[in-house]
Image (cartoon, rainbow, N blue to C red; front, top):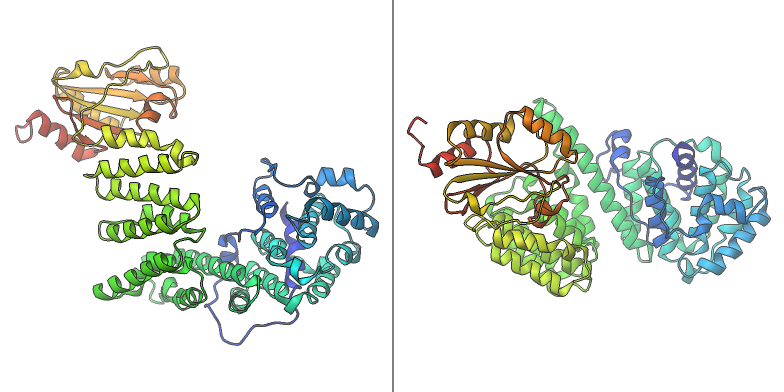
Length: 545
């Protein structure tokens, strides 16, 4: 896919708007184009074949079966032999595409995908009129709709500051002529906005996108989304530069990127781009508000999300990110938002993620409430049995109900890769450290502390029991023997083997400290905290041992 495709699409799109809509005022302070271009995420196209094309463009070794055969280079060559400069070839293609795919993909969008694949195989026409004049002839206004934005959105994800427009002048001229005949020129301005941003003119692209975002018509919601993605990517890029200047104590420290972008995000929120509210909630600390102002503004943003956007299809992304940003201070507000979203959403994806996120937040921020977290996952399984989250919820429920601090350690009876089982019950009466680990040759870190502790106390008082997930069992056993460790080890042979999967162990090393009565007293404590925990359980703290 590479440079030539990038060049064609850039030339096509940059010429798509008649005249410049740029004003003298900057909408968002410009940054170096190469840095912006390298971090801008793709805007998701609005039709399934467009999404499939975007995925395949990024992963050529993983073709997507949902792409119609006409969009793949080899079938195109078979169906339409002859020169791509022959208009008859393109007329035949138009008829075929219109017959098979018109309901799902308008001819204009299909043309964009065909052109990209032909270009990738060095079969792009040299005469623009042979393709564009035939395939990009506007259809009636009621047909072109939002789907016509497909090629522009796909292109925006692929164009990356390597344009050679001088090599594709005839293509650009032909597209400009065609798009100028579209209703109100909306697609031309939208496409030009995407292209300007992709080639580094952030202010010019953003202004065009914002102008379309506040206009009426099918392009407006797509333009709002594109403008939001543009600003979000720019802030992420500039934050790295700002943090570098801040850590270097640069006297010429620029304004914080979040404060720069705030007015634009507020404008987008006013236009109905709800994701701007979540973006603002997560980053509002950058505004240096008082505690009272911060609480008031955060509450207002969450209220707006719950009242106006609870049923938005992107709310599953809010739920996912809520897991990572939740703190003790924000926990109750986020849980209230997610509960409201779950009640109002019509999308199974959003409802399932709201339940899962609530469970994770309760479990992480309030570990003393494992039953509440487990009950939410039980509801997830009952309400959404076919969802992928439901399939992975049962091990998590088991862990929440049986593997929290204060629970009795359950027995695991299934044999390991060597046919052996570990009898955890037989170790009652001693303090046990049960560690799931991957690298048997590790000498420092958590395993090193366990080594030291195992040398301090006899095995009938303190014992280390290991669960190895190293895929090379033979090499792991040899490394274990060479280390001089005398731990009893279950050789599972894989991260996704029975024991770690059924106990919801996802990171390694993972550690349980069990007292003499078989009760879990600590989880995932390492370093000095691990040492003090074991010494406390053995009654050895302060004895000099």
